[in-house]
Length: 101
Image (cartoon, rainbow, N blue to C red; front, side, top):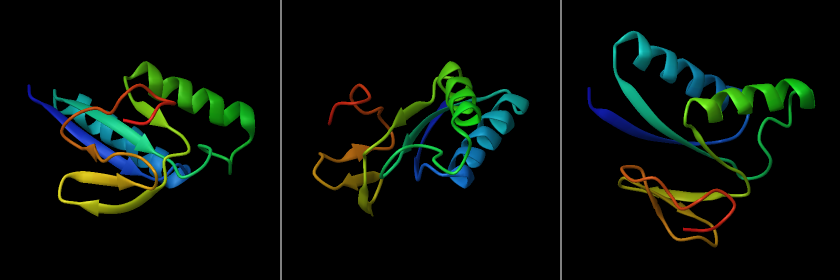
């Protein structure tokens, strides 16, 4: 089926849980979702480090783009406008992680 692109603004347990649930739902329905997670700071700081690393590795294995230090200033249509970065369009993946644009 068609690939749906989704950007999640937030890097906490709730945001990562939403990403996992969306991946599972897409798989159950026979589809695919391309997810980008944008976090203002570090991802999953509320979990013990080992648990956080395992979750993030699992998401990466499912093709999720994880971007730390990417504060979202506002949403503008289908774009996330980041503080100090160019916009990221939710219908296109951003540049490589760790690098703006």
